[in-house]
Figure (cartoon, rainbow, N blue to C red):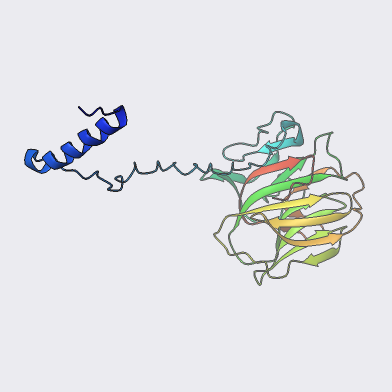
Length: 249
């Protein structure tokens, strides 16, 4: 009798299974197929880009507003810091003060129009802005605003050809090249002075400037009349404001 060790028996058993596999319908091949595709990679969402914050200009400090005259229905100062506008032969039409364009000097009995503002005590001739909305009735040589009645230290002028100009220190003028106005259209003008230069802005755009030292003689008034030429604005104005700093835009 033959005796087989464990390894001999294992080989005989494996051989027997291989011979019987076809009869039992068992495949003797081990699958070597490649594994199926793995899970799709997870797509990370694109980072959300936050819009850049809109930088707003800082509000103008209340302290910088020395006087504010809406001129919509009366002569009162809306800021409560200054007195009323001195008026004569002025009417209020469509939320604005209407000036008829007739010169009356300083006499309220003359029948001519008067619109004068007395500067508040805090007004500084070395740092200021005077602003107003205006709508002229016609193309003509007329002022819109004049600072001072006797000294006429700074003013904004309309020209008959549609041009614009600065008047300063009584008789001096500076042209505003390329700037113009049209009758019946509202504009916003700002006159500024920073201690070195006078500038005029029309609808936020600088249109003329001149370097000068203002000869003001402490003449603390603003009006729509040029008392040196006897000319006065003709048309509508509103939102007359005086600031304690040079604010152009």
